Amino acid sequence: MKIFLPDKSCREADAGSVTVEALLRDLGIDPIGVIVARNGTLVTEDALVENSDEVRIIRIAHGG
Image (cartoon, rainbow, N blue to C red; front, top):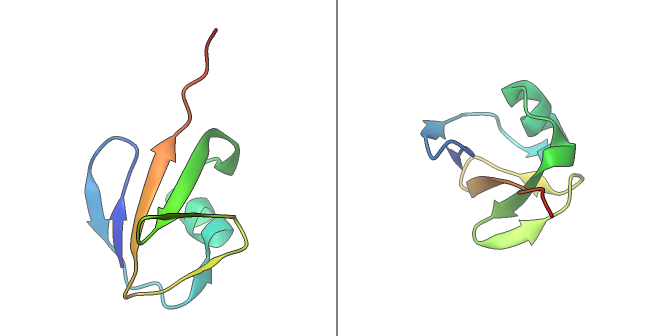
């Protein structure tokens, strides 16, 4: 799968079929601070991502 990280870098991974939560954990990313899009659609932490997917991890901006 092609993974776009919050720092705008891109990484290729052969993780098989895993949940978004497991993928984030493997990447060392706290799921509380990000949203994830699979093939252009926002998904929840329990959604499955596969090797053919494009995953974009977007950091949530906090502020007031």
